[in-house]
Amino acid sequence: MEFSKYETFTHGFTLEYPKGWKVVENMGFSVALFTPPISSQSQQENGMLNLNVSIQDLKGMLLLYYSKDKHHPTATGSDVLPSSDEFLEISKQQVVQMGAKSLKYGSTKIGSGEQVHDGYYMSYMLENEGTLLKINQSFFIKDYFTYVITLSVPSREASLLEVYEKAVSSFGIFSPKGYKYIILDEATGTLTVDDNNKSIMRYNLFAPKQWKVTLDKRSETSTIIQYQSEKDNLTLIHSIEQFPKQVESVSKFLSQQAQRVRTRADRDSTVDLSSSMAKLVSLPSCNVEFLRLQYKSKGQDQQIAMVVIGKQHVFTTTLISAAGDMKHWSNILDAVLAGFKLTEEGNSNTEGELLSYSIFAHLIKSYALQIPKHFEVAAKFSTNEAIMFTSTKSKIDNPVFSITYEDIGSAVNQEEYKQLIMHFHNESLEQPRVASDKITRLDKYKASLVEMLGFDRQIGNEQLKATFKCAVVKRRYGVLLSFRTTRSEYDSLYSSCFFIFDSFKLI
Image 1: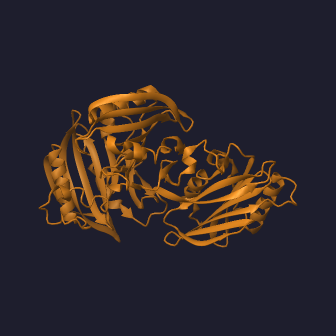
Image 2: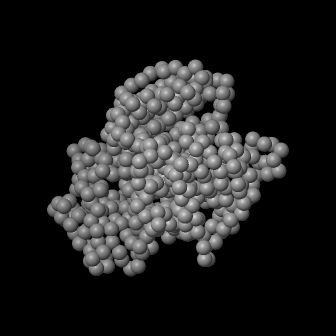
Image 3: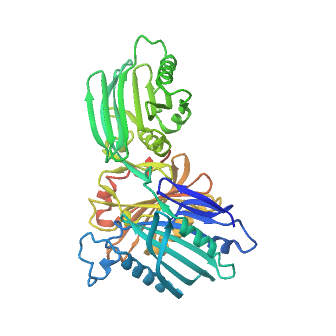
């Protein structure tokens, strides 16, 4: 059997898998899923034959299991990570509860050469939707993360142990580059648009929340704000300047700027990415022209993006990385540019614009949306497809908002997807009732906005109110935005985050 090498810089690992197998990334709990070509077996069984890798953040699951057992020696309420032995015990209990048979387990080695990790293996039989599966699984813990390699094979198929053993022996980890998702915070200010009305415009610029501000210099004629991530060796610079009066046109100005970049760039390193700007930056009330270039200079990769408002103001954003690394980080600039807003001061047409908010951007799924500052990502409840948020203003411990972006597997229409979501809510809630059901839009796609009432005993005895918005994008991807909490706090909490539902944007 021939093998191919798989490498992901986002998650920081590599392994070998059978040549010709399909690779799907970030699906469900798997960060990488490998499946063979379609065989003569049923489509259902084909989906069950797979090799997959999952990565569990142990900081996110600290007390997820232990909090259920107050007598467990590590259930102290402190940040105690489970050891490899404890993780094995947790895994054994889980698979036994799922109905696993013929369970075997023990210590093993994962990787080879200098990349050898002490871990554990499990093998067992498990019935899934009427199909008996042979499961082989190995895992190890490194730096707060558990790496799990699993081969699932229907019992009627050959064991494919060679595939499993090759994946385990070739598995290696390295420092990842790139973010899975990011939260951006805003910097705001005002400027005068020198038209007949001399209107005052408010701008919203964004940068990664965790990055350090190293320069913030503002005057009546210019602004420059610089951010740095020392850990990732990245710099982001926002600048605002008045359009030079001596230049006769915007197109000539942008041509001059492009020539200046090419002059200081390494030879043949400049790439024009301006065509991506119209999709990212939406300023419908302004006369806007764009320039975006990527180039290498003095041992660094740089991207520069310019947004020129009429012949009055030039907004420039620059991202700088180490040489050769921009391919891992350029989606950060996409998210930053997608957040750029320019609105007339005092304009109340879009209420969400008047509120202070952050932007959540999923850099793997390529979407962004506004979130209130009191929202926090609930990592232990989230998966690759569904990101959960808690609120510091809520009295409940459970997430109050979630966004799901999932591959449905085939083309479906909007009504079919809505019915799937309705079925889920009807199953998960007691005494469910639809309060309203409206047709609306999500980004540029037809969507449904539904309000429901019901009870969830895991949260308490009080009635819940839920609002969700769902749409099918790109024919086969389902997007679901869901907000739910108790009736007593719904109105006050919803009033601080209603703009979420209209802010979703593909980037």
